[in-house]
Length: 91
Image (cartoon, rainbow, N blue to C red):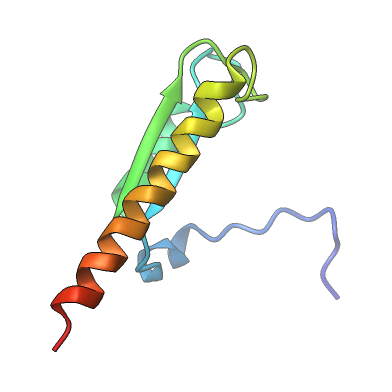
């Protein structure tokens, strides 16, 4: 039985992810996702975009909630556009 509080490391499985991935992280040195860990994602994921919110800590929506939401919306719209072009160009 898995302990609900146990840390499960999935680094070795990241290279199996095929879909685009957006990673958001805070800029301060005490942010939960460090620069080094973010680079590990970049190395192992095939299609990853990492965006750093320099002014934000763990709560990425602070101090600029609109930037946080528009960043996610932009990523999703980009995916939607790519999907639409694939459907148009499909045989």
